[in-house]
Length: 227
Image 1 (cartoon, rainbow, N blue to C red):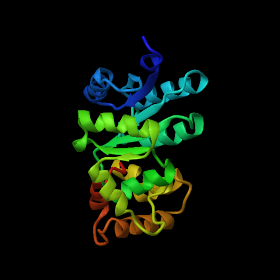
Image 2: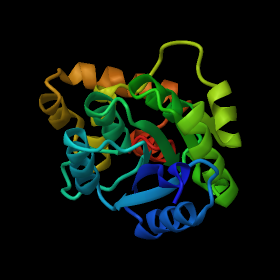
Image 3: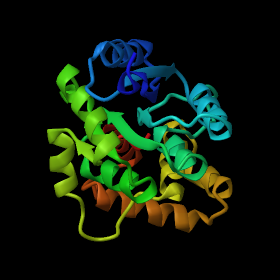
């Protein structure tokens, strides 16, 4: 085995749909790259992904982290996502490249992720195939970033101002989605009722549903991948 053949690019794929991570592993490990081999570890939950990232910080770092945005929480009150793992990775393993693999191509969702993580790549799942996976690995290793076509279009449409769905807004959306009343949300986020109402109105304006009710707000937030 030559020196080039012995070089290994280590990838961690995190998605709560095991068929997806297994597919990434099967495709990438079977590919014949010019300068390296690929080995893919998989994690099928937020907890597994977090553990593997934390372990890698103490030993051998992953070259690339593939993160799904929507990771369903193990416990109902958990508010966690692939974006949270991206933030963690930037803190613990800044050497690792971060690529999001998501169904969402909404410019607001992407804007939020670029504000919090500034990833090395973003792939819309409907555009992922053998060719794009290979191109992503080669590009991210040598000259990031890498975007699929829809992701690139959304990035070009990114809002020019600084409006963003921040962590407090995400918590409000989450609590609304599980049926928490507005007056009960305020103490959960250490705010006044008026603050919650104001933020709800701002979110409705941001999502273009100024006259919608809370149900409409939840549905729109879910479509955009914020809950």
